[in-house]
Image (tube, rainbow over all chains, first blue to last red; front, side, top):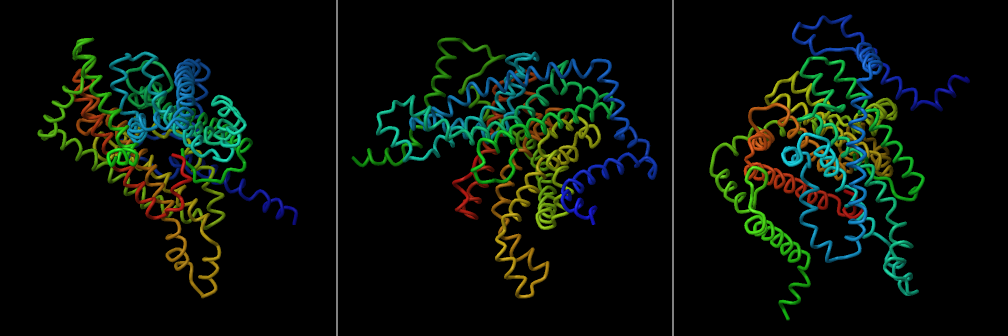
Length: 265
Length: 262
């Protein structure tokens, strides 16, 4: 009876972890029940081999070295996009002329996968850290800017008029009404921006690079070290999930009243 | 007077157009008179326009586009075929949801493009590798949007079908699928963007043809005008596809159009 109740209460957790464990066990056991043809075996690896490779790379400092490089590109690019995207989004939401002036570029740039600018950025800024920072920036700035701007646009008119009637300046209006009201949108924008920024780091380091986790993946793939590829992919997965959950936590704390929308990454 | 009202009505269009025209003129003039262009590092609109004309008349561009769209269409179609049913079942069967949700959410949140080198090496530099990449990236918006659509289905409608003795099949076909369609279209819009990323990165990484390859090759050989042509064409395709989806979305579900966060 007690077991039944426990099961019912934790059903979603049990099924969720159970499924992942099942997949891992199945994956691990593939060599036991199926002999892969020679060509395929080269590309195949198992979770245990990936774990061993992870331990090895962690011990010889390889991961630390690459992680450090990727983290700098991520933080610098992401920071830059916050510094540019937030103020510009706020201004665009408040000024119709600015909105109309910039709208064509922002619509076009937002629809285009920004990764397409990578060869141009490499050409202009070289294969060092700057082309990575800028591709991260290009990816992350638009979701932030657009969400901030939508948030400002959706501010309650009545509140704006009340504050205005009491003689608030534009600056006070921004501080008292506009900014607090756009916080949930900004956070949603941050969540999207994190995904785009990580994408930028990964792809930016694939090409013309000699350091970083993206480089580690790409060079391991060319050398058929499939387990190392999965170590890199696993690290990126873990980072994305952790960052996304952190922002979600923030979101549910600051904006619990906002209606749930479909997942968008 | 009529001119004034016309301007007031189409303010957004005219200011936008003016801004683009001004930007292009400034770019052209500054690079012609102030800083003379070093054609290896920078280019100007007139050179891009000339390259554009040349490319559109030639066969290579169209061939590249055909190759890329072939991979895109295969990958995208499989994403639709797999994603929608998985999302439907996940939304309808509680235990399937419990089992799949953590796993798929983790995959959706993570940059699966990191698998691109592996995919290209395993599946080859041809259509198959890129199509697999497009599938991998664009299947998740379909799964999760279909899932969200099923979750938001009006339970009254479900009870009506049940009361009149409808079967599981009727539930799916008459209630759940139709009320999910706006969500699926919204998912398709997201999936297009992700799928394009798959194509581009796949072709940057290793390819011998395709629009992404054309762009990266033009970059490697310092042919900037051609590179810009490729980027502009890709932007145009992305904008057109996204706008079509947005229009469809508004047609299919006018009440949802406003509360969208891009």
